Length: 262
Image (cartoon, rainbow, N blue to C red; front, side, top):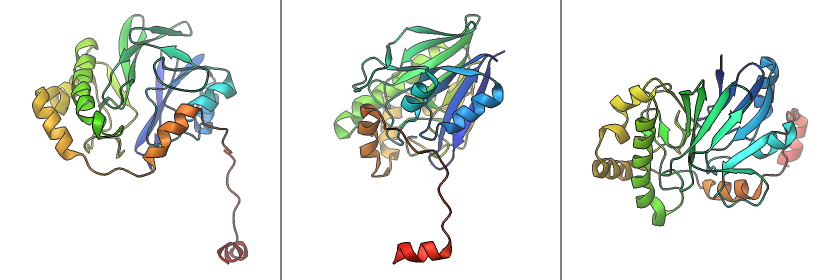
C-alpha cells in the first residue's frame, strides 16, 4: 500500500508531500527546512530516492536541491527550466519508476508558470493521486501573474486548459494534492477546501465549471497583491540554493537582547 503524507507550512499556505511504499519514498516540492522531510522518512523507515519539483517556486527557496544532494536522490525538474545545476530533466508524458511499485507520470500543466508540471502517481497502472503544485488547487487554481503582466493573460488561458486536461485524463477518484492553496498568495482565489478529488473539483472548481472566457475574466479581476520578496525567489531557485543551517537558533536572554538593540 502506498502512503501519502503531507507536511504543512501554514505561514506560507503550502504543503510538501512524501509518498512511500514502505521501502522507498518520493518527495514533492520540499520546503527549505527539509529536515522535516527527513524526520518523516526516518519515522516511516523509508529511503528517499526521488525529489520532484512541480515548478520554479516564487514564494519560497526550495529545499529540494539540498535534500536530493544530502540523501543521494534524483532531483527532477522540467527539462526546459533554465537552471544552472545538474538535475534530471523530465517532460510531458515521461513515466518515472520509483521502487518496485510506484510509477509517476509527468504532465505538463502550464498556467502558474510556463513550464509547470503535475505528477500522477500510480500503483498497478491506475492513477490514484495527483500532485498538482500550483495548477489545480482545492476549489481554485494557481495565480497566473507572478511572471509579470506580459505573461498574465496567456498563462491564465493556459491554466484553464491545464486544469481541464487533468480532469479529463485522471479518474474521478484521484486525490488532488496541491502545493499551494491553504491561504497561499500563490492561489488565485481563496478557498476553504483542504482536501478533494478530481470528481469533487469538477463540481466546484471555477476552471471546471466556467467557460474559458468567463473563467479568465473572473480570475484576472480577483487577483490581489502578493509579497514583494517573490521577485527574488525564482532566481534563487534557478541558481541552486546554497546549503542552509537547519540548527535551532540560540536563545537570547534579556542582556543579550539589550546588547543587540544598543
